[in-house]
Image 1 (tube, protein in one colour):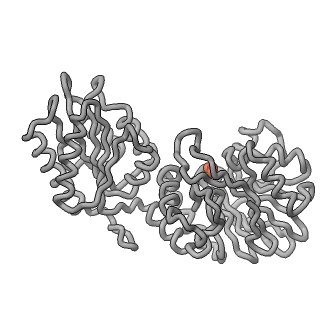
Image 2: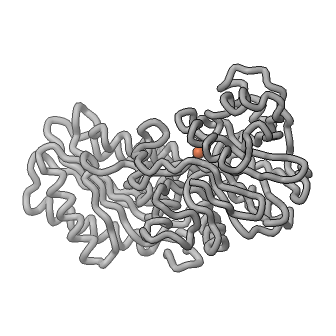
Image 3: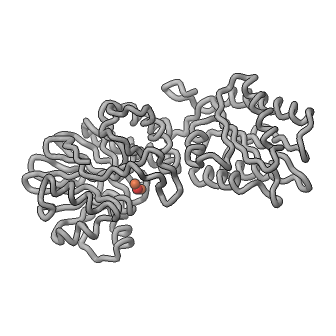
Length: 407
Ligand code: FEO
């Protein structure tokens, strides 16, 4: 989709509305996504900021040709070399061999790492500028907003921040600006994107937000490399990133489990009754039939996680183990975990969930509930009491509250 977003600045990337998985098969994208690329046509320079994945290059070139002969491109800014943005670099470079590639110092590692080419690179740092004629580009190192090589570009004049991955959403519906969203899912997608992609780097995100603010550059649009451009919601998305980077969690619970012969499911039913007794909001997921990236997005913003598994081969079921691995890798914080599950010949899953939650740095405020074979009425009553006690433990948690009432 081509959209002029400022007098000499165009969005020329590719909307992949049918894409359903991202990062391999790591993350679901039920609303598709977009690979945004921006073209600045100015008096002294014609600059392309980011390319697209290799499979979308011909569409990108069609969009560029609709505005300017691609041979006129004088510089290609590679904000981040991950293949969804840098994949088209070789094709672009073959069309405009004299165009300068501009990147961060870590981009000088990742670009040749991916492309095996010895292209000359102009390495920039925060505050470096490029005079393009009527406009000035200012570069900003956004290290670890997603990768070490990540950077952003501020387009002076229209004051557009081309933020690359930061502030993105996997949103491939027909809209271009946040205020054009008619799905009502934009904020869910923005938080899911943060939880599954940016969450491990919260400390870095806070530092980069402060560093960018210190530059004193005005911002009228934040144009990320995925999804919609923030126009009306700039203050909101900046506030949300601070909140998410501080791992602020809301007083709600995720109840997630897997089950083999319905015993652990019956415990989950009883625990759900206990949560309802205490009027704590919760969402419930049977992990074998739930989308993992959606579950992770919900856990990221929740103060409590009740996680259940039967003991299987001396361990917890793979769906549960995988979820715990992801929580640890994504470095979620401010979440209390409660474990439950049934067992037969060996009692192991509950202890394993508690141990792995603690290894991930999460609190385990109450001993979990384990019951042998099929739950008896007393087991179900114990599970219901556990749900009530957990709800109360979450309610008195000292996790920080957010400015918008998430607490
Ligand atoms: Fe959209 Fe880190 O790539």
